Length: 236
Image (cartoon, rainbow, N blue to C red; front, side, top):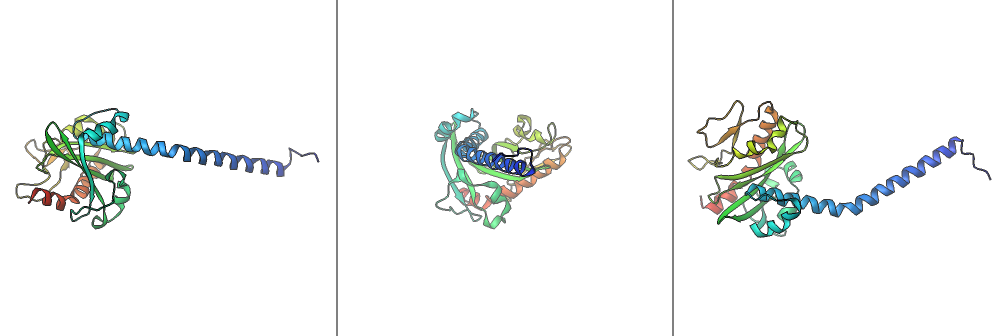
């Protein structure tokens, strides 16, 4: 029987078969590439953690250097107690962000660099156009910021996206998240510029007010979840 390639039925069947074949090809490609994507995401996490302690490297070098500098990693709850059986690198911060603080599983990374012990805490929040995240590294007094790394999904280039720039991140070094009385105050991101002698504030991004506010809220929210752990470790 001769097939009428001009008929509507033929067009419908042909289009349906092509859609199914394309969908199948995409599914197979996703399944094949997923392990590679997950491996690259893990390397990027390690790379960012290393950057927060002052060790810059290419992504493919991150696993080796991570083993060298990061001596411990574990997961805690809001009370500062260790949660057994959890891999700190595999914690999905976006999922934890959606939970109330009391139910979050919070990763902790303990590194050693240039003879100093450094604690690294991940943070996650909401910017103007999408999620923002990063890592805050504290000196062994668990108060003074050693370094930070921030990233974003879709902030405006030249404005909110400036949170990734070194000039913005450098100003966090030496700032303190507790006041002189031991109260957690986090870090304020001040529009118009922070006072030079304020140990708890940095300059906001000019033109990136909403991203700056989101970053300030992120720091207060996520770092606040580590307060009980910090007090346990520091003995305060």
